[in-house]
Length: 138
Figure 1 (cartoon, rainbow, N blue to C red):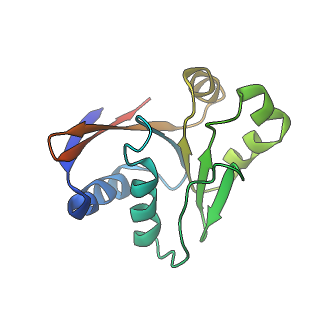
Figure 2: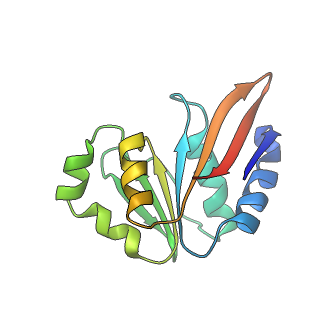
Figure 3: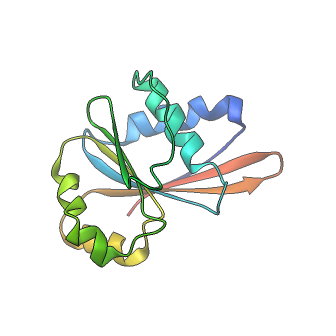
């Protein structure tokens, strides 16, 4: 299963709508792309649709933000998988909801799949004046 959606900032609703149709009640979603590709911007739109009124920012220093009920946001840019496990953050994935992960690497992805978690990836790349969102189940 793989789908590509090309969208401008004003058209991000189509990406969020598709995710809402595709994702089960509980899922881990790796948001991938270069620095400033739009990962946090997509997260902001997801949170808005889910009714979050507070500011949504990348949890670079806190590693995790919990928004509303059942919406979690992780930024693993500065952390190794071993440290992630030692901090007990892995256990957070057992909570019901969408777990949106920025900067997760392939070894973490492989571990989570091996542990039986349902995992999806949204890859974001520039495309002309827009972004291409490639969404696939891992």
